Length: 114
Image 1 (cartoon, one colour):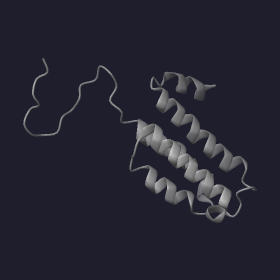
Image 2 (cartoon, one colour; image 1 turned 90 degrees about the vertical axis):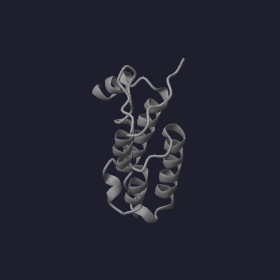
Image 3 (cartoon, helix red, strand yellow; image 1 turned 60 degrees about the vertical axis):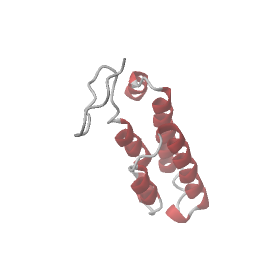
């Protein structure tokens, strides 16, 4: 199971839970298609998207990738693409890992820490 090996490699519990929530939401929307057949106008589908968006915002904080994802989830048929998983991938792929140098924006150098 490569997906579980990938999740084991993620050190942050918040990111790991965000990945699980996003994959579960996309799986529910793809597998339970007859339940969410009307697409963006289905109350259950919209409720699921609102809950997932709230959970991901709580776990990862705001990232601009969540806005187009939520909009795409409201379009009938686009929820067959794993948009929440793609958004979590995009939001977590640019995290600075321990040991990597931090690239600072141009400007005066920050004060040295004692």
